[in-house]
Structure formats: C-alpha cells, structure tokens
Length: 268
Image (cartoon, rainbow, N blue to C red):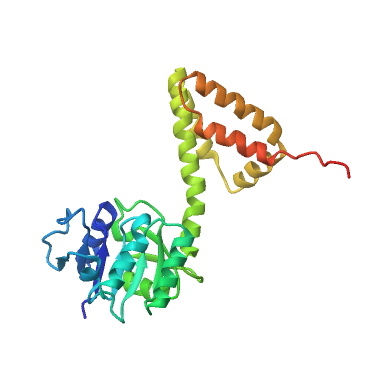
C-alpha cells in the first residue's frame, strides 16, 4: 500500500525531502503559501499541491512540518482547526525549534489525540535530501522512524519525549555554530590586518590536530586561566574594533571568561 505523506513547507529543505519521498514511491501532499509550484516536485507524478495545512494533512499517514520554527505551532493549529489530521496520522515537526516549542506541540497533540514526533535534522539537507541524519523523539518516534526509513531515510530513535531531539541538535548548534561564527569573525579581522592567509592556515592546522582529549583540555584550560584569558579577549575585542570589525564573538568570549573568574568570598 502506498504511504501518503504531507509536507508542509516547500522551501529548500522541504522540497528536497518531498522529491526523495516521491522517488521512493510515496504519495506526497504539499503546502506552502509562498511556493505554490515548488521546484523539483511541482507536476511530478504522485505529488498533489494543496491550498492549506488542513487540506495537505487530509488522508496523510504522516505529516512533516518543515516550514519554520515560528510557524510550527500555527501550522499544527491550522491543520487541527481545519479537521485535516486524521485518526491514523502522526505529526512530525522537523523545524529547528526550541525544546519548549516541541513540548508545546506534543501537548497540543495529546489534547486532540494526535501523536507528535520531534525530529532534528543533524546536517544540511542540500546534498543529502531524505538521507540527512535525523534524530527522533516523542511517543510516536519509533513509528515515524519506521515509515521514513522504509523510504530511505536515516533516523535514530531516542528514548525520550518530544524536545529531546531538539535539545541535542541545539546543544550541538551552540558549539558548532559558535565555532563557525568565531572563525568567520577572526578571518574577517585577519583580512583587515593583512594576515588572512596566515590565520586560515593556522585554524586549519588546529582543527586537523584536534583529538578526543581536545575538549577536556579546552574546558580545563578555560576555567583554570579565566582571568588571564578574559583580559586577553578584552584586548582582542579592542583590536577588532580598531580594525573596523565588530567584536561580537570576541566580546562574548571575554564575558564568558569573566563569568568563570572566581570571585573572592566575603568574610562573615
């Protein structure tokens, strides 16, 4: 029997996922108010363009919400209000939303008898499509994973409530996106100082040498030398400002080192 999947949000990620679902033999019902004819799926056999969240969800075995974090709850509420989510359907939220939003979706689902799965996509969708690594949590995570993996997806099921997958993704984002932002800022300043090639090579060398002990060394050193490193980052932020580069990450680093600096204990 052909599985029917609704895809809400047909931007870059949603359209690529919908394309791969169609190629795997699923019937796809799509909706995006801003993209009535999504590239790569519009007009494809098995794809049905619809006019609302409720219409797209109608008759679907699985609903994939891939619109945006700010639209996640509104999309679910619109589908429910329109009577589109049937008794057999599972609602899966793939948006990069906070754990609190995922938990709110799960509670809304419980109120209406609709199981909700929290799905976190752990890598960029372009180049991977449906095979992008995913984490799934929530009461229907196992069933959702079974449906998607049968169509070629890579889904790891976590034993926990909706919000757990989002927590893991966002914790990784704090590290990875923070590191990326710091590298971009440092290279921008190095370019202004005429040292971009040197710093680029230095960063690449440090990343290549990183091993399993690197995290422990970084954490221990940051705490042990918080006072000195805080002063160093204050000087770095001043230099960036002089170079005409806003020291957003450098100043954030200074503030974190300041927070980690031991405070003298006042006598009683």
